[in-house]
Structure formats: C-alpha cells, structure tokens
Image (cartoon, rainbow, N blue to C red):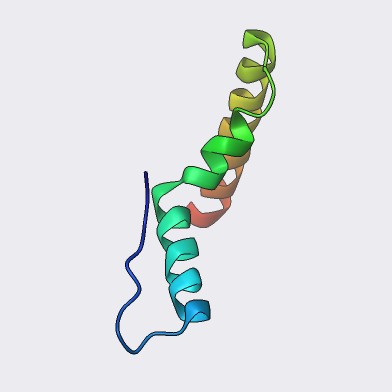
Length: 64
C-alpha cells in the first residue's frame, strides 16, 4: 500500500500532489488502467508490435 505522511507545515493539497507524483513514478495508475479489462494475447502482440514500430521509426529519424 502506498502512502505519504503529511509533514508538519504541509497543506493537504501539497501532500496530495506529492502522493500523485509518487504514484506516477511507481507506475501504479498505468498498471491499473492496463488491468481494467482483459486483453487477448493477440491484441497484446499487436499493441507491442505497433509500439516497437513507432519506437523504431522515431529512433531512425533521430540518428540522422
């Protein structure tokens, strides 16, 4: 369970912001979104292949 202790001179908004940053760095929200619905293995392969193609295309233009 993730948690953030509120410091003495810290407002609730600032603690909430710190908590959100912590969750973002840990990848909790992306993991939750990924597991919200079942993804067939073929769909996962297609998604991964598309991401690899995008990454290769981007790195191709950066190398020039």
